[in-house]
Length: 463
Image 1 (cartoon, one colour):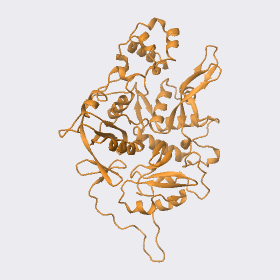
Image 2 (tube, one colour):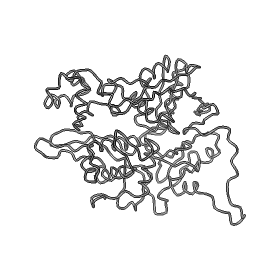
Image 3 (cartoon, helix red, strand yellow):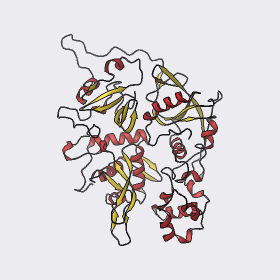
Image 4 (cartoon, rainbow, N blue to C red):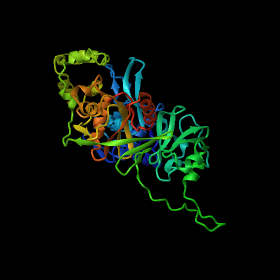
């Protein structure tokens, strides 16, 4: 039970957070690294962060040699709420980050001038006493909704009347500065905050009549909610006001904002042109590799002298002198086994994930150059461009992770994609669109990047 220090999370916000985690990370409850992740844990983590004035905490409490606390930690606060596993703060921080509810942060101690890894609750997921127990579905910096505004206007998309609107934080849309906006989970409609309302700037299918009727219109949350709500009976005409039966679809809806064709191809409209992404066959091995970082063979003294580890070197030299000539993988395994979080300082954010081996094949060949996407379910998880062949690039990098890739000076993006496909074996898909003209590839990539749900999202020339 939360103490008086915590403001309990509103039920509607908790439900939205659990739904977001289930869609973007894994269906709740699930197990990650041997620790059970439940709705109660998600709520407790958010309440701990929300109780801070800055909505920020160090992931682990830090104490100096004099015994003084340098940075309060999420681990300590969760322990007071019966979540006492030493790794649980790392797990819940990663889950909240992957779901887009929180973001990585740096916590500083002004006395020791030290900085520590932290986690920050995004403003749109915060709440306060005057919020009335409901989520404020507005972007930071916009005016608060009035009393006549439905508190949950994002529960039903005004465009497709099917999906829900979720916050996309700090991404850029065409012609619009980097901002926070709402995107539909089904049709991909995008609503950008403007004054006291929201402007509809994009939907999936350009031929949709709603595009012409509501594109670039700015409406209040109340007006959008009215459009989204079921139409009431017209008392004057006696008609029900229901929309006519929908025409039979010739194809299924694909991951927003794509349209799935009968052969599995995904169509993406950009301007007056449609780009078609063909699915590749993904062969995933049955086994799962855990703790791959422990197989790295460089010596500890060689690793700590690399440019990627300036703050780690003095700590290791002072506390672990006897390990300097040991293999780095063995050293980090010892640290992890002793619940010493220092081992994570050597790894990239995905360096301690479970991996698998996979290969992509395509009898037709994906072409020499083009654009690729990774999709799980109805969500775009990664995008990028490829040169000089796609299959060798992904098969030799993301498809077969080396121990050295798990480290901070390794290959973070390949680790992320491998772990993503490994966790979503049943619904992960890889698609490619062959292109030869570099400016066209750049334009298509720029259009796809804001649609990617994960952060970071690949935008490099190759994985």
